Length: 244
Ligand code: SAH
Image 1 (cartoon, rainbow, N blue to C red):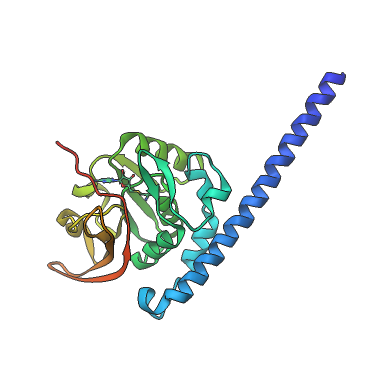
Image 2: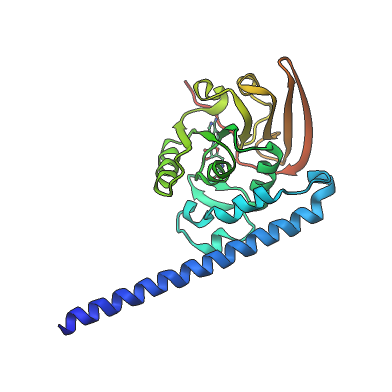
């Protein structure tokens, strides 16, 4: 009887600690959203134009639990406005950059979106809050597998993950209203432009992998015509190519 009581008491203590931890995580995530909002206000004119960051994007950032996508699931690491390591030498971008890329992609609830560079699945989760369907490709199979598992575990059932080289896009999943590429390459892959709908946008760091790149927005204005604008200097991990 005594042992049973002790067992129940220790279970209550563990549950209360977990609940307190969740409250602390929610607080830290809310603070992260406020720091993104403040950062956006400061850089608004040059980077985002007069519109600034939309409430829809900020809300998606507030609803997505970034700590679930990093290896230790640590809130103090997850909610600092810094890149976070996800293993295999890869990182999730600083939250402000995730918000910025999402904003520039101009995603609406009826959209089908492609992401190249799934990594942890965090950016895909943000997009999943805003779009109808998200297809995401990751070249490192174990990262693709882990991201698919996390996304499934937390109910992101409008996201499909595929392991492979995203250079060729994912024609069976498209055409796409928006494409977000989260690894740096010197040129925009032409298959991605082909799979973009007219009126759609592609957001990608363009430039050499080992220096800083320009975060670039390509808009498909007609079947054979695009416009390109560089938005801000950024630093991303390299876009790698499969050998086959
Ligand atoms: N968007 C991710 C972070 C991406 S880091 C997140 O939210 O966590 C960039 C990712 O792009 C890495 O995981 C890297 O393995 C992947 N990558 C690099 N080249 C690629 C390619 N050709 N096709 C698909 N993924 C690629």
